[in-house]
Image 1: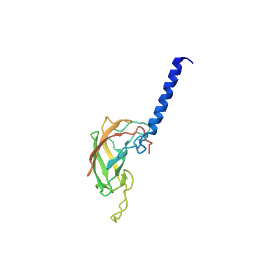
Image 2: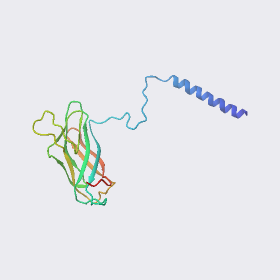
Image 3: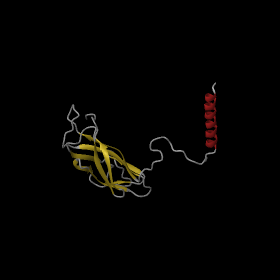
Image 4: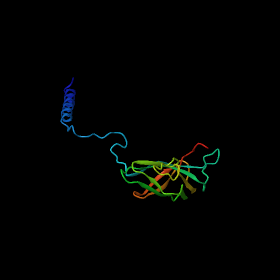
Length: 175
């Protein structure tokens, strides 16, 4: 071996020894962050997930019926420990209207979720059976195309407005 090669090997070995010593002296109480996405993130007191629009399509094609109704699906979660949250309204500049049915304000109990298209549990409420709620997007405008997204604002009593880009499903299964 030449002198230059021995010097490089010696420097590399010294670097490994220093790294091991420094690593061994590290504070054992430190918390290392996970490399997983979302690790260390904090969910807000009110959150919305899995939102997408399923428009009506012409049979046998993926062309949206402009001006026709579409279904908005999502899950809204209230992460508060003691206070309920209420979904008051939903709006989008890319549609004539967004209608929630039944028309009553939707209450989300503490530490729970509601999902469009799923029954809402009315614990202790003898007024009627648990009914699913649906959200219809009426009059999608011409810019709404399969595989694109539109801005949708969900208005909550405590959280206020939550605006998000909601994708339009590209080619749903025909029903």
